[in-house]
Length: 366
Image (cartoon, one colour):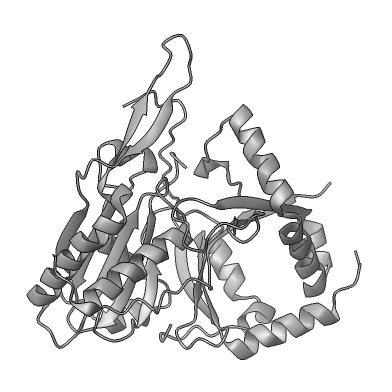
């Protein structure tokens, strides 16, 4: 995870009745209380070399209470509608998060947690940057919800860089696609109906971050705080993807998920201990798709006392051609929102696909 960007997610709210300075005070006070329950987030990364004759190093979190970062900012003239209604996610949303372009290795000197409260004309945005070495998406939203609960309740209170890569995103379009509960149900039914075997090609790769807590035996607690995920790949040719139906694609992905069991996880850990490696974002090819986050995360349960969030958005971190971020739909009921990043020419072709566009809504209410 050292070369991967921080997790950057945030929630957009209509303007609360409280004045913004009072909101900032409440967030800072409750954040200081929340950090007592999540001490790694107030620490820093430390690297030690136990044996000078060995190239291996030990990297760990020093819970030294150095602290997290809280920033208050103003998005001059920007409104809630300016965030939600544009066809593509507006670039100014990137400014709702700090730090910019940091990779997890920077947690040696930068805070492992950075929060920014951004004031809009008629709303506020709470953006959170969370070092991925500390935890995964489940841990991120565990912390975010715990912090929100504390706020709502009004509780007072270097290094060799040979394995570090600083990835720069290409020019991308970033767009939100909403799948209603009815659309999801229809797609599932279609996949079941079509779920039968059918069939010098380009190899396509589909990778999804799979959560391991419930797959290990014995199971990890759902409240386990840390990283318990793997990137599980599925490979196919472009011809296979285009030449088969939705049922074939669903079955192929289902096999990948079903195979990711306790034995597979433990084998991966054993291999990693024998030959540690780091993820490089540049390793995703032009024909790769990577899906992260999850519509199962309780994003809209984060209530700070101002009502439910209007929408969830992500920062500029970990954005590349083919990156897909999954969110729950605000209305619940099994609806799903996908944030898709593609090069402009690929997004234009994607938008011209009638089968995909018939399944989604692209209105500004998600």
